[in-house]
Image (cartoon, rainbow, N blue to C red; front, top):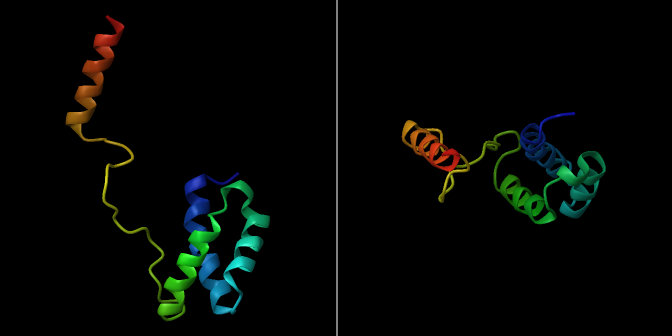
Amino acid sequence: MEEFSDIRFKQPAVIEFLTAEKVPPIEIHRQMQTVYGDQCVDVSTVRCWVRRFKDGEVGQADLSDKTRSGSPVTASDQLHQDRFEDFVDLVIL
């Protein structure tokens, strides 16, 4: 089975294609649920992407995720790795 992140990356491309084919957002979502099941994006996300694709030229949309504000999902810099290791050492002792 595909990784969850791979599936999430492919879904905007599917939405872009079906938008170009003039498929309504609710129908796009229904078709995607059939294929992706529980890993399908929410219908509100489909509507958001449809609006985004309708505003641009077909095939010219940027499908990559934009930088978001807020805390990162993971912290992999050396400072945080050191802090984590210190925490683990404290808990184990």
